[in-house]
Amino acid sequence: MFKLLALLVLLALGGWMIKYQIQMRLRRARGEPAPEQRGLRPITVIGVVLVAIYGVFLLWRLIDSMILN
Image 1 (tube, one colour):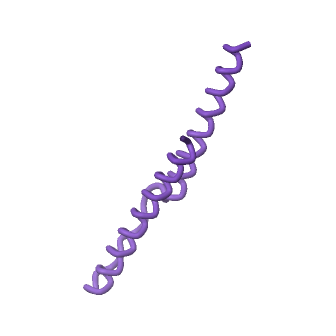
Image 2 (cartoon, one colour):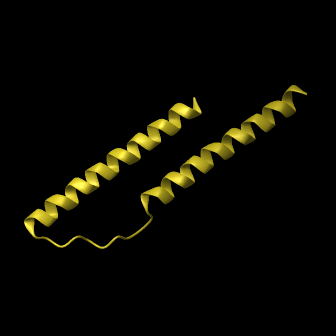
């Protein structure tokens, strides 16, 4: 299940990056300057999300093993 969730998140990130690249190419074609990069980078966001999902998974397994014993 978590593999599927990670795959969906990575696909969403890829789609977002492709959309961004297309927008930047259209702006350059019209002669507009590219906006300055602000905020969190997408790879930072995806990294935090994947680490959070992994942490929740580990806590879930730990609590599950404590309850069964």
